[in-house]
Amino acid sequence: MDDLRSVRKLYAESIRQKINLRSEQLVRALAEVPREHYLGPGPWKIMRFVFPLKYENTPDANPAHIYDDVLVALDQYRDLNNGLPSAVAGWLDVMNIQPGEHVVHAGCGTGYYTALMAHMVTESGRVTAIELDTQLADHARTNLRSFCQVEVIAGDATRYDPGPVDAIFVSAGATHPCPLWLDSLKPSGRLVFPMIRWAVGVAGWGVVMRIERTQSGFAVQWLGPCGYYPCFGAIDREADRRLGEALVKSGLTDVRSLRVEGHDSEESCVLHGNGYCFSKLDSV
Image (tube, rainbow, N blue to C red; front, side):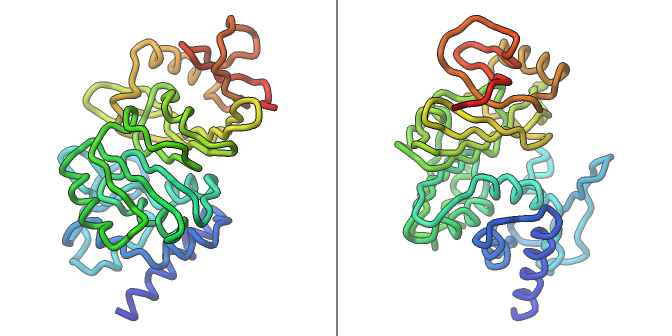
């Protein structure tokens, strides 16, 4: 067990150095949360983020094999994985999660990254974990039962209203920002979510965006490319088409703000949708 604790610490430090993590709370969480607890019994099927993507088997059931920057299969037949640590940790880092905050994890899967958030908010905070797949939600509820600050909801994260929250992390792809997520953010609240093109039956590819509620609107930051399965309540055919055009034209890298007030499309509009517009203009 002492050896495994050392492995986790090395894993946390390797992720810190690889992506220059700023949050000490997140680094401690990576070092303390037992990833194997959320993955089912080993041996495991793992995938390194090197194309062509393919699974490989761990030599045995030693948990040390999954303390690496690898995807781990939750359901290989659906290509459903526990996410890449360097990618997910990087996105959690820019959420600036603090002790005592109320955080929502939409698409919590079996709960590993939810557990990291629970460590970050501490027992003085709250994490509302939402999962549409009832079987995964049951696993998450069991896996997270030691965290008094976590509530697991089996439901649709685009419809379940968590009340005012400090941060929302979405682990499923959307073609547009869900109005409920925006409405739920407190002042200075942060939303990190993937915007993807969705090809039916497979994961979609797109970009991860960070949105923060400001005094007069929403500031936006492009975080990087991603691949995710869809958040079905936030998939819209017309939004998908417009997102595709914007990704081809600029990749959304030049977006600075999100406008939700009605206005005609203008030169500063990068992605002008129905009830939302990603703009080059800065948010005040």
